[in-house]
Image (cartoon, rainbow, N blue to C red; front, side, top):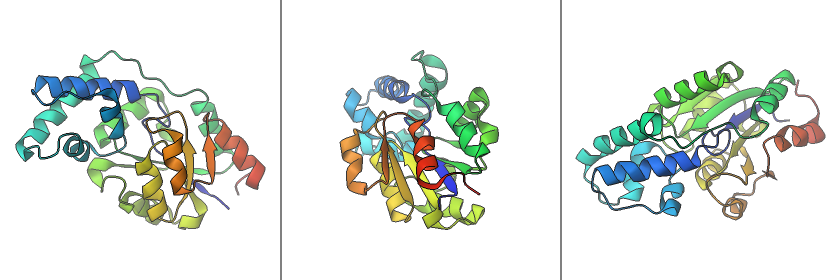
Length: 220
């Protein structure tokens, strides 16, 4: 029986893909780095920011990482007006899952500062028992982030599910022996996630709760 549900954030809970892409492109322009196509920037969503920058710009000097981080943060937080919003049904679904007895967690490539900010803005912070960010552990797809969550909650891997929209989420969960739910509306096309053998593919967030009720009723 599943007891712990672990959610990716960007592209799974909140519709931030376009803003991440445009902020990364603007930051690269500011620093005279090679221009980024939309599909290139989408590829790195889910990674920790230093890992994302290195993947986007192979061979980049280490002394350019921090300036790139700073410019990206500026655009994402202040300089970019691309809207972000929770995907349809997210708040109601999370509240319903909590009320049914599920324990909820977040495993994200965001920084701690960034996640805390958006949890406060959305009012969802109280729903999650534990959260892990890329700058306080190891970036996806390394499974260490999930190992930490499982250890802190005391939940065995077979009783946990990871919900995400990228190959990084799916690979991380597979390597941690955690079940996987793949969402189709995020950064990576759903066809790319199938090779990680998710137990479920969903096209709307609310489908998660309906499926869990069907397969196991209310969590005790």
